[in-house]
Length: 133
Image (cartoon, rainbow, N blue to C red; front, side, top):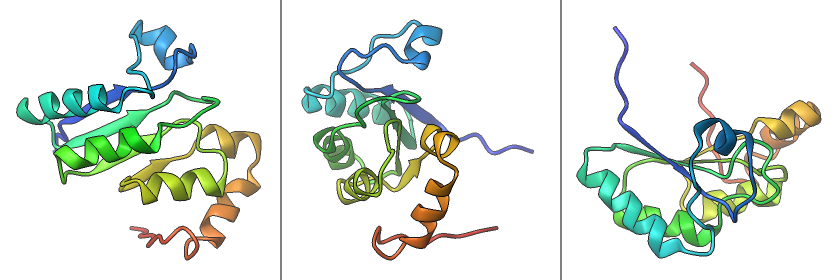
């Protein structure tokens, strides 16, 4: 009884080898080419993708560029999820301001467990509404 969520997974960074790139043996879309990410998202939309997950990779030094997020959001109003390299409130706020509907924060919390509390305590600053089910 699981709902299938057709999700386009898009690895995006500037050539930094991350664990997901190593394991999946994929070449990331360059952060410096937002039009390429936009075209890739459009192709995914035409193939029936309902969600877009833009990932810089676990522990990435740089997150997905705002221009890439904006480009993907410009071709679809479907939810955009952004992860990888989001290790500060400023980076999270920029991801949301660029069009992210949801962010994934993992390694930053593993390195500093107080970071989750910092994010939750600043939900107004981040313009977030958090829902717990």
